[in-house]
Length: 134
Image (cartoon, rainbow, N blue to C red):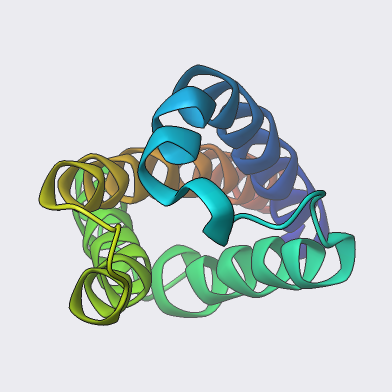
């Protein structure tokens, strides 16, 4: 049950983030300019997605720890705020071309994508868990 929830959460996270990056790509390019690599480095990107969703599993979606969907949404949003905030605030602190608008937008996005992905994973675990008890 946890493996299925992890995979579905990962797929949702990836799908939503691909859409987000497609929409926000010009904004990132305009802000970061020559700081961007000529192409995406796949291994670090994959590592981020695998670790971030694993973090959601461990700290938010764990059965018995959560107290319902609202709890999952709030705690996943906080997890997204912390993870994306670490990245964005560090960049804002040390990178010359990083700006406050991009920082805020990206942190809010981290909250949204984390909440949606964790909610779906949690619902899968809850549903499969309730089927087992029947």
